[in-house]
Image 1 (cartoon, chains in turn orange, purple):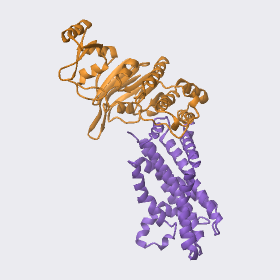
Image 2: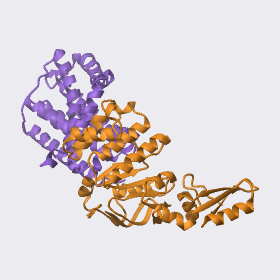
Image 3: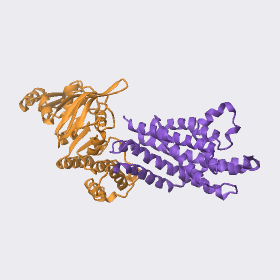
Image 4: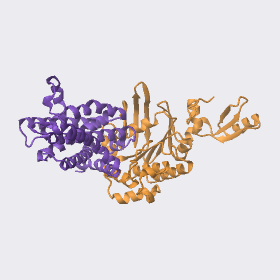
Length: 283
Length: 249
């Protein structure tokens, strides 16, 4: 469905995305995981025709993103990181304009359906300014779904949302996958990537450093993590291949040791030596 | 076929936003205040005892104020809104990511700018008819007014696309719009201006609007000015469309 080869984008001296290649299958939920500034948003902008790559190519559904942007725009829906709704217009007016721009037929029916999916039907005639942050994110999602896109791009879909609203967003994304759409999302939330994605690409400083299913990525580092605080007050993490190995280490350390399953943060730390959410180095 | 009408959602959106603005008293007031101050200061105050080109000063001034007001409003609202929508609200990106042509975006924005310019002009025209003067409207006046709104809406798109910050739009305005308002024949005929500045004055589109808008019918001078306005309009439209087409982040 999506195939990118060697995508590169510079902003002045900075290389935002460096020689990125990936392939995403139809119906897959693909996550780009990485800290702020890793190049996730730039990648999404290039895939959605908003930003022209300096080099490399990308095909979506057989069309070239740079040479045939018109065909791409007919096939994609985008939820950007910034809220770009018209705040002074109502939810309905926002969808109406978007639907007109994309030539949506049977508009009233589609608007009702999507507003009900995101649970905003009762607020359809309210001005967006009166919406909470979570409601605005949901309306952005409804707007992107209105055109029934082949590929749905979500740039940090749950950024700044409280956990309950975040889970509501996840449910909607899962439903979108059930409908057969390909979903590409960026996130720096480990939980989000693990909860939603069939495949995860890990980005660090503009480079794609790993790409696989969350399970396979975790298998790189080992299934279990033993954590304890050392004499200097630092959190030490030992990753183990098996549960027995983890118990062995725990037994040696004695009290104050916890054993947990590894996650994508551990993979990121293993590959980069830094934490995803803060970018801090880890010893 | 659908492509032809794809400017409409852009225009429709602007009109929805404009309708909301109109409901605020401040908007109406701000559209009228500057030309009315000029009308009172120059027309009713200073110009009471002045005659220009054989007519009383108000008859000379009102068409100039209509031209100036249509320029200011068409230009400013488009430049400012487009710049804010592109850099801060990011709503412009919704248009860029929609399957419509750059010229559709251009037409939608320009038509919306024209409506705003015409709205402000109509307010001045109403005031012009309420005070005693020889001011009248001819078909040529209406055509020139429409062309002026079109031209400056196009220029507004160009500024909105080029300005790197909202403060930048004010800089463009100070360099291009402000001098035009004062030196293009709004308040006094351009033949009173020293000869060495005249080439610059005749480069300014508003000068040509002021020439044509005061004529009852097109003579040679009017025809040349009208042609200049059309050439500027086409050039600005094409450049604005190109800027939208080449937009990338």
